[in-house]
Image (cartoon, rainbow, N blue to C red; front, side, top):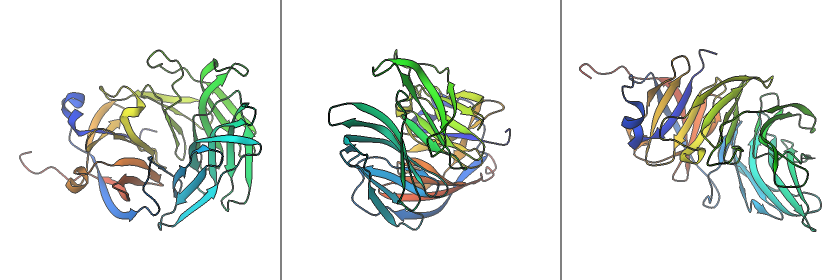
Length: 321
C-alpha cells in the first residue's frame, strides 16, 4: 500500500497558494502518442475505462446511443433499450477488462413510474442483463478486474425522493446478486448529506476509489472495508472543479483541474504532502481533461484528440535550481 501513489492534477494558477514549500517533482508524464476521436464533435466529456473510451448520445431519451472507441481508434455504437421504458436516463457508463459495458441510471414507464437500474452488456453486445436496484439510486459505477460492479448512491425511502441512507457503497455481480453494501460516512456539501451525485468512482487491481462531490477521496478494499481518506488540496471545494479522474492498475490516482492549463501534483500518502509532477511544456499550453487509465497508461482528451502518457521518473533538476 505504501508504494501506491495518488496524484492530483490541479489548476496552474492555484499552484503557489495551494502548495507553499512543495518539494521538487519525483514523477513525470511521458507523452506516448495522440489519437483523434472519430465521429461527430463531443457535446460532453467521455471517460476511459478498461481498454475503451466510453460515451453516449441522446443520453436522456427513449433509446440512448452508447458508443465506444478502442485503442486503435475504431468506433462502435449501440442503441440501449429497456423493456417498457418510455424514457431512459443513461447517467454513467463503465467498462471492464473484457470490454463488457455497465450502464446505470433511471427509467420512467409510460405511466410515469420510476425505477433505477444497473445494466450489464456483454463484450459482443449480444446479451444484456438489466437489474432493477430501487430504492438504491446509483449515481456512479465502476467495474473491477474480476468483472464485478461497484456503485455508490443513496437508498431512498419507498417510492419517495427522500433518503433513508445518503451514501451507500454496493458491490454486485453482473447477474445482479448483491455481494456487499456499506453505509459510508462522508462529509456533506452545501447542506446536502448525499455526495454521490457528481462524484467519481474508479477501481484498480486491489481497491475502489471514490471522490465525493464534497471532494473527499475515500478508498475501500475489495472486501468493502475503508482503507483511508484524503482531502483535496485547499481551494478545491467540490468534484465539479475537478476535470476528470483516473486510477491506474497500480493505484496511481490522477485528477485534472478544470480551470486553466493543468499543473500536475502528487500526494504522498505517508506524509500527506503535495508534490508537483513534471509535464512536457507543449502539453501544459493546452487545457485537457483526464479521462482514465488504460492499465498504467494515462489517457487524456485535448481538442478532440486522445493523448496517452506513462508515469515515469522526473528529470533531475539542473544545477542552481
